Amino acid sequence: MMTKIMQISDELKDWIVGALKSDVSPIALANALIKKGFDNRFAYETLFKIVGNEAIKTTEGQQIRYTYEVPKIGRKGNILHTSDKDVKVLSRNEKPFVLHLDQVLSSEECDELISLSRSRLQPSLVVDRGSGEERAGSGRTSKSMAFRLKENELVERIETRIAELTGYPAENGEGLQILNYGLGEEYKPHFDFFPPHGGCQQRRTEGWNVPHLFE
Image (tube, rainbow, N blue to C red):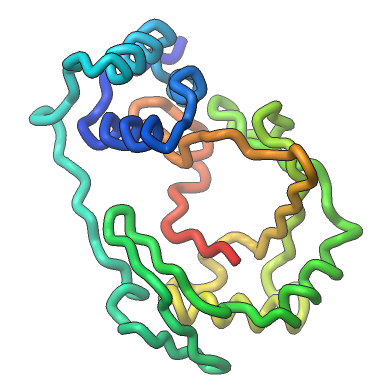
């Protein structure tokens, strides 16, 4: 039986506090912790204490705190140059590091991707944290599809542009993904994180996602 997690870091506590301030439900946060391997009672008691401004014991002092690093894309200035276009940085956040970029894709490129993906959209899946297998999840009700790497000229051009922006080779990433949300469809709050002691199969087989680029 997998050992349940019974401690949280200062950074996870700060993230939870920020999520609560953004009106994320405490119950949703507790359930998210449980799905990621935290003990049921510990997860709910921790959330109740945070909501009630009670002191909770964290692992600060028992572990090395995360060191924030500025990625390559954050050291290139306010105009990012690629082989086929320049991209302007509209805004920037440091912790977590987020860049808001202007027109990474043109309207024509977006329209073409939508057209190419429309007939291939399928119900979006989630990854089972134990087996690492993809499955349907009640918290994710959108439709999605993914292009193969270098599937066509358009996809290859966009992949090259992203690689030049981020500094990560296209072959090190996932294929371009298209997400479609109809009325009432959603992806409920969740952690894009696998606890180091949680034994997650996906973390062992696929590794961590480093950068994300959304259009």
